[in-house]
Image (tube, rainbow, N blue to C red; front, side, top):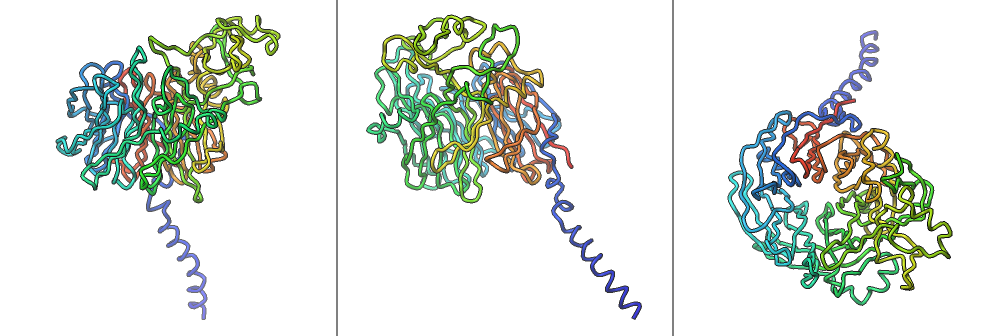
Length: 502
């Protein structure tokens, strides 16, 4: 009886030990990764400005492919077999235009290449990641600015910006090229002409259509693409137009345009430093609206809802024949709205701030009753089905950068920290967003497991003007640990970070 009782007492303890041993936390150390502890483990400098704009990783060869337009246009290949020691092992030469973006899937490297004359059709060239041989070249719309594979590997999509010529006499339509790999790389070019009849209604909600002499389709300028996990839907930012478009991949059609509205810097929490000549960094409210104008976009699906993450960089059209930006000190404020106009237009107040001249003078009398600045100095989360805003980081990116001593006050009068790049990943058991800020030379790390309530975790210093923010999950990483790879376009520096464990 005593032996039986002892056995009965031991059974629960043994079962608990077995359960612990089978727990993912034991068998898979990556589950223990702490996303608040990313630290730099290596770096490589591949050249001058323009040399490290975008990178893409191939897990099958453990190679990192990097855009290098810092002289001779090429794609550099970095050996990432040991993430702590980066080595450049090859370069793929590119002729007839510069590479703007790269994406990897299933042993294929796809490169988006603009034409020497940006208003002409660009191209996608697909390479084998093992031997760098060319597989196929496919035409795109004008100025393919970003490229991505669908998660299932069946499609390649490019955001074709379609920028006008300097004299604005040649303005190709913005478009998205949808390339079907399984259909012998056949391509369909989708534009936005079907929404021309809705222009007035969309503009009422914050869409911008303002290029001189441009049609609706010509004025739309796609910037960046995110694709749903099931590869059925894509979302593309229309940066200059302040909107996100939704695309049915299976239906090969643009189904929606979601205008993003404006951010009110007079509201508590949205305070900003809007002058670079105020003898310091002071975040305060101001009668200014921010135009979101997102650059990069990423998607996270939770409980059946696609949440779209955008980094709200802002961008002004600046051409020989048309420049929309002007400083507030050089315009005339409506005295009926701005009783303190003279004080506001002082350089230490709002006088230095760049705004658009295409908004704010609703009745065309030359008096501005509203002020609209470029970008929102934040990242936002939107419902991918409706376009409704779920979350905005308000002024947290800038206050965190200021606290860390990396806020560049010289950019206060323009677009602040300029959030430009974003990537999402699973670190440990948390969904994490990495936000690259071009003018702070830093990456902010957020826990976005709850998309309506992101939590700031840490700030990482990087190279000059981070453009590419790439996450490599632990399962694909050579060392079995998650990697963050940041490539910076103004100094050609690539840095690799990895988290510690709990």
